[in-house]
Length: 424
Image (cartoon, rainbow, N blue to C red; front, side, top):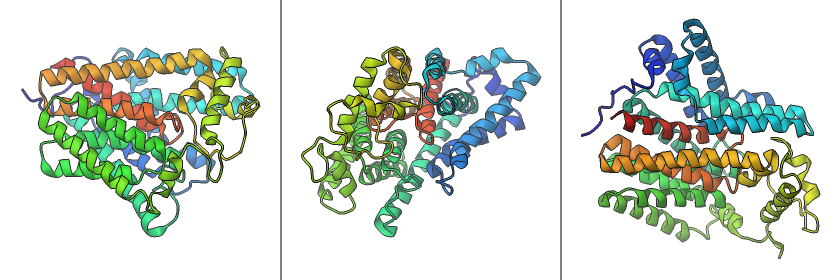
């Protein structure tokens, strides 16, 4: 029996239900939606301003929303209800380790700033978006917002690279941050739309997938999107949907291979190569990974503190060639977490991934047994999004400012989809 889009998640979410029956609740929902939508514009139009980077529209929307929610709870004294909106304890454990790591920081300001940004999105952003999604209809709206944000990013990138020749990647100046953001957003949006029954929406999903791969300028983005779509094709039991997803992926990869020699795809083909340009040396990215493993070996317990890896990394190349060719944000996020917060920090971060991945998988299995158009599509999209995040994190961290909101949103959507299925 299909789920009513307006059915409230009312047994476990009294705060969200109360909020949405008021004008204040609509403000909270608007702020959450705006945070997702504005993430497509990254730090535009003041990319070089450090202050604007910290207070970009997405961050500001989450910050304002959290302040308003805090005032609301203080006034109504309903802390118990608010607790239902909180993320899993694994996130609090990871943030706690990040805070403690500051004791070993070479620069307490950098470490503190990085940790605050983590907490803002992984806790504050989670609560804000969790509060906004109180029904299947609201859940659907967030996937549509994701598709809109992905489309804006991809189209602007296409215009920049194919027409204006600026060398930018939409509103992102860096191909690696762009790759992680689009890898997650394209995975969520294309999977959700490709599993729709409506032909126009399926076409929209296929278009986002094709553009996502064509506009990829890094190995991380390409690998993340392909892995995500393969994951969704495997998990979805409906044969006709499997065929649609598989054909869309095959067609996208085929087009990518057909245009591989074009100037437009040169950034991607260069990034895929394992060796440096005009050199027999292994690409600096992979040498960097070894340096971070060396760092972790020496600072297993303490790490360098969040945000402080750059102050130590160069000392751990040993005899490895340091060519200084590594581009900004070309960073293995898994090793970054380990190097900055130590082995315990890596365990906590993996705990986050494993918890929400299992939740997404469980939701996908439940929704296939009890068919529902919204929950089935959402479950497949969530698992695809988490898969994309895990792969993209190998090449550029999901924790970077301006990208973290996409990662936080995957976790929220996973939790809310599971809750909606449980409510049935």
